[in-house]
Image (cartoon, rainbow, N blue to C red; front, side, top):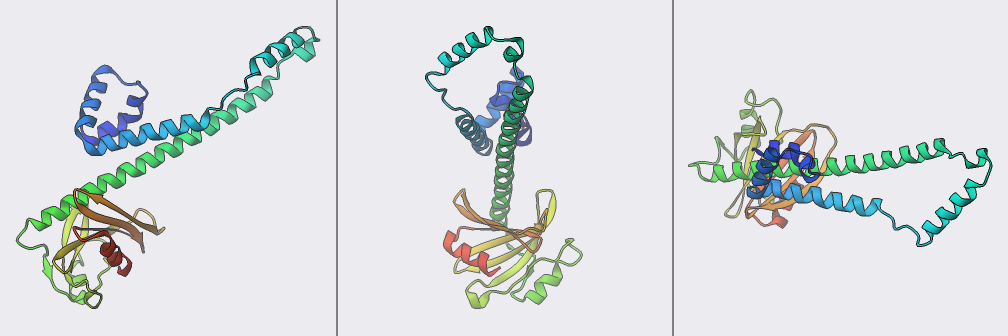
Length: 249
């Protein structure tokens, strides 16, 4: 079972709503995959929080009040004993709507986290692969006017290319990568002896997204969206200085 298959059945798995064979396959995959294991823990944590929010302790005298009310209603006229089904239905519908919205929010948060961690894993892998090559760039130049035109015809968007030598982040050059089933532009910067890969591709929407730093397998990452482009910066450089590069870009 692959990550996407495990993710598709994860919610049903936690609710014991999948068959035995599928359940065994999913549990075996989650046990051996750190990313899916983390997502499963997120699902459980969200479910626990929702159950905590949705449950309220009943007053100690509730049972007595209910029994007394039932006894009174039993001796009243038919009109007074008629249960207000319309009010009950409205309350039930409201409760179901609240529960449904809470579940939807929880699912959306888990889904977003899963996608971000999947992309993080892919860009870190691309960063490591580049370090294993004889050269990390296909176009070697510190001139933005040289590097940016090189991408014309190779990708379907205009990447943001800046020479930041004066700020302590000299541009080494650029190359193409293939991440998330699409061609991506990659710029390579340097900070002392540390190489920094900055991956970029068109964002799904135009709304900017604030930087999200993270750490995976000893590499610092930061992702953000600006100007309709999604950025991922990856390096073994410390998080503070990687954040400075993000601010400059």
